[in-house]
Image (cartoon, rainbow, N blue to C red; front, side, top):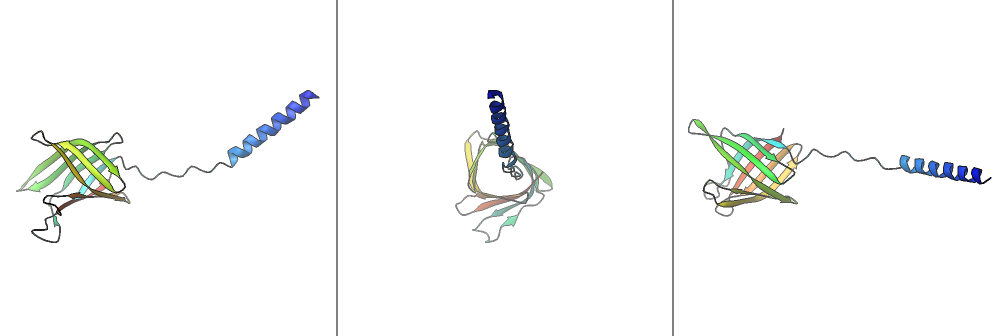
Length: 145
C-alpha cells in the first residue's frame, strides 16, 4: 500500500514538472549585437563658423570595431590631396543611453576623450561627436558588417 501511495505521488509530481516545463515562456530573439565591426560609409564635419550645413569628406573608408570588453579599434581613411590619409585609434569606449565616449592616446602621447551620441538602427550606426570649438560636430555613418 505504501508503495502505491509513493508511486502515485511520484507520478503526480512528474506530471506537474512537465506542465511547468511546457508553460515556460519562449526566449525572445536577440537583436543584432552592438559589439561588432562596422564599415565607414560617410564622414561629415559641421563647422558652424563656416556653414550651418555639414561638409562631407571624400573617399571615406575603413572600419570601427567595438568589442564587448570596452575596447575599440578605429581604422578610418580619407582621400586627401590625391592620396589617402589614415586616422587610426585604439582605445576604450563607454556608453550609456544614447551617449558614447572614446578614450585613446594621441600621436603625441596625450590622453584624449571624444564624446557624443550614437544611434543604431537597421544595421546603421550614426555617431555624432562633439567638435572644437564647442558647437561643432563630426558625424559618422557606419554599417554593421
